[in-house]
Image (cartoon, rainbow, N blue to C red):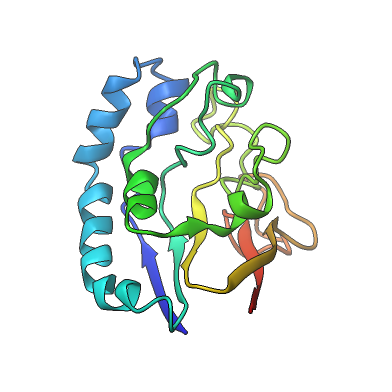
Length: 188
């Protein structure tokens, strides 16, 4: 198994552009490019090229905090979850898919309306700027995979214990502002 991990740049954040600033779809995508995330992922994928080419023999995983939603989640059917926006072709997840990587969560749960799998953010129901605006809830952490005979048995967005809301997080049992992604795979 080849395991890669990444943490892509966090700003600007597309769901804020959409939900708070109400920018039309092309503008958050331009800002997504300017965030550096697309170029960062291209660099990771270039470094992974040998492993991806050999993934039929050795399974490959890319995991981490991508700080961007998935094009598989922002669809014509999920506008109610994303401030009224329909399909948004988020380029980071499209690039990963074009490289042959599959998202474990969406493989296990193909309907983003019924099972959104939000990982951002279990501690932020309201935006922390004090405006009272609801925090966009999105799946921005991924377990991506490639490999012949690799099957996703289950994948979950996961927290445990008491998860306190911002800013009262000091005594929270959960140690992060993101939910984890826990995926179980089998190999034929």
